[in-house]
Length: 136
Image 1 (cartoon, rainbow, N blue to C red):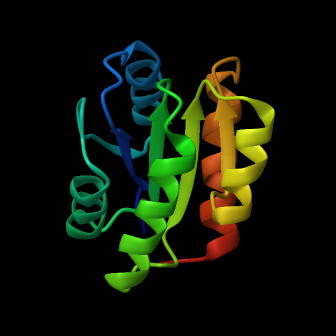
Image 2: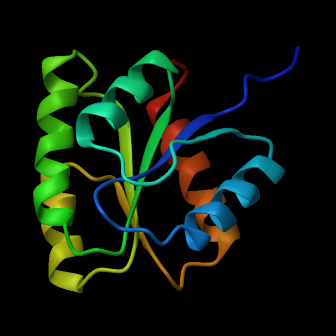
């Protein structure tokens, strides 16, 4: 029996217009056998949460370069809780200071994968997080 592929939504939230990195990650995850949905640029937290729920994803990955992580993640977690999806695995990627990475982990971000994280490490991290959570 075939295993159900891990479903991942990758999102760019806010005004950040740089998406080369998230596209590289999307391709690496796809090539590793995951179902990947890329939301495109300039999404709101509401759009991202709605898409994650509608697409029944295992992981929501939010890529940020614009410095809005301390504003965006509280909104995302509040919306997930309100919509009964507070157990969704949320990860962050992009560029941010170490202290912001620590702060968003305290909010509930399960993993922070910065710009220098090798693609295989991202794949391994997502697989480990989903395996630890168990089947959906």
